[in-house]
Image (cartoon, rainbow over all chains, first blue to last red; front, side):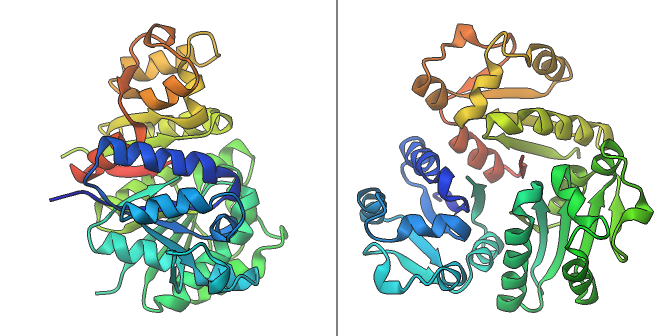
Length: 110
Length: 110
Length: 110
C-alpha cells in the first residue's frame, strides 16, 4: 500500500524549500500519495502570478492535491478565482491536516 | 470518538497565528479534544500581562488544555505563579507531545 | 516498549534550541529511541567545525542516530567526509521521516 502523506506549509518564506522537499519526497517514494496544505502566510504562494504557478501546476499534473485554506484566504481577501488552476479549497487547513492524520495519513510539516 | 489533537507552539512570533489556527480548528471540529503545548520562546506568551491573557483564558474555559513546558520556564526564570490562570505545567514540552502521540493523539505543529 | 521518535530539524537558526529540546526529551524519557534528521539549512550544523561537533558526538555516543539528508548536502556541496564523525547519511530527509512514521515512530518537528 502506498504511503499517504499530508504536508503542511505555513510560512511564505519557506515555500521554495518546501516545494523542493516535496519533489525530493516524490523522487524517493514515487508511489506516495501526497496532499500539500497551504495556510497562514503560505496561502499567498497559491495566488496566480506570484511565481509558483508552474511548480503548483506540475504537482497537480502529477496527482498531488494542492489544498488552500479558506480561512487563510478570507483573512487576506483571496478569492477562489485568484488561485492557480487545479488548486483545491478546504474550509480549514489545520482541520484538513488532522482529519487526514485520523485517516492514517502520515504528517510532515515543512 | 472525538479527534484528540496535541498542538505544539515553539516560536513566540508565531503565537498569534497559532492561536487563530486553533480557533479555526475548533470551529471546524467543535468536539475535538485539544491540548496546546507551549515551549521554547513561545512560553513567554503564557506569562500574565503579555497580551495573550484573554485568549488563553478563553481556550481554558472551552476545555482546551494549555500546557507550559517547565524546562522552557526554568531557562527564562518564569515561575508557575507568573502564568495566566488555568495554565497547566508539564515537565517537558517535547516529552508531553510524544507521550500524547503514543496515546493516539494527532500531532499538529504550528 | 520504548517510544521511538523521529525528529526533524530544518532551520539552521533553530539548531541550538532543537538540540536542547532533544536533550530534554531524553532526560524525561531516558529509554526513548531517537533519530534526528537534519535537512534544508540545518544540514550545515552537521559539518565539522561549525560549533556543534561535541553536541552531535554526544548524541551519537548515547545511541541517537543523527541523519543527514543527501539532497540537502548535494545542494550545498557538502561531502560525507565533511560531516562530524558518526553522522549517518540518508538519501532524502523527508522520505526518511515519513518512512519512520509508517513504521510506527512518533514524529516531532523542532
